[in-house]
Structures are given as structure tokens and as C-alpha cells.
Amino acid sequence: MKQIQIDELHFELMIDENQIQKRIRLIGVDINHRYEDKNPVFIGVLNGCFMFMSDLLKQVVIPCEMSFVKLSSYQGTSQGEMSELIGLGIDLKGRDVIIVEDIVESGNSLKHTIASIEKQSPSSVVVCTLLLKPECLQNDFENIQYVGFEIEKEFVVGYGMDYNGLGRNIPHIYKNIVI
Image 1 (tube, rainbow, N blue to C red):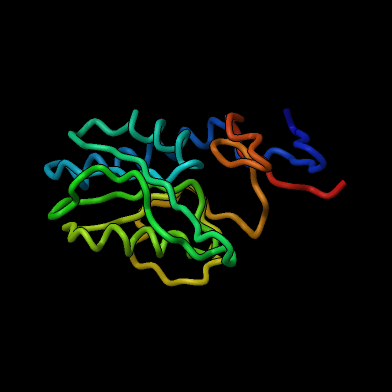
Image 2: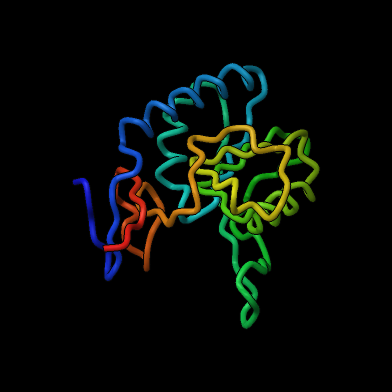
């Protein structure tokens, strides 16, 4: 499908499943080499990371652990204020942590996630994101180690990302178009 519609929005194909899988294989090779003797902990940030993390960990052949977290927002405050990281059930002290994100836009939620994880004194923290929007970043990060694709300021759906709760199950990434 070259174009799809979700509710009132129209989208066109941006990155197909084959391109995504090729990039994930390359990231997996690098992680296997870099963390060969380290037993890293992968922490996926829900909901969007589920497809990316699943496919990424199929490429990781070294011993590792994984967990998922979700950010909950403060009630009654502006978007972007995070209250807590929920769901982390692993002691991270002295561990090498790889945070897995579907997309990094402003970086506000990622900044909060990193700060929450660093409170547990891990040995290292790096970020692996499928998509990065450099023009949208409001924070500086030295630890974004793995980026699948850099994209422009476009609204995207598919491969874990949604619009109004729909589209996460689409195996490709689509960008919003005006019709």
C-alpha cells in the first residue's frame, strides 16, 4: 500500500518494512560486537517501541536482559511533564543499559527516562531509537548511540507508532500528507 488513511488523516509510505529490517540487522551487529562480554539490559519505552524492540532483540545474540517501562504524565499539567517511570523491575546498579525508543522528537520524555535510570547508578546508559527528528530536539544528548533513521518534522505512523491509538500494527512507516 502506497497510501493509507487513519481517521481523517492521509499517509504515504515513507520507510518500508525491508528498509527497517536491514537497518535493525546492522544495529544488532554493532550491539553484539560492542556488548559482547557485558550482558546489557534493554529497556523499552512503551507503547511505541514494542515492534522495534522485538525485531531488534531477534538480532541480538549475546546474553542480555530486557524490561519495559512506561511514562505516566502528571494529571492536569501541560504535555511534556513526566511524573514517573513505571514498570522497571530490574536492579540497574553497575549494569550497561540500552534504552529502546520508537522515536525521539523533542527529547523531553527521553531526558526524564535517562534521569530516572541514572538514579540507579548503572555503569552506562545509551539510547537506541528507530527514528530521530534532529530539528525537533529541545535537549542535547551525548548518549544517543544508535539511530535507525533521521527524519524531518513529519508526523508518522506504523511500526509501533500510532494516530488516535490506530496504526501501531502496520509493518511500514507512513508520513502524513495533505490531500
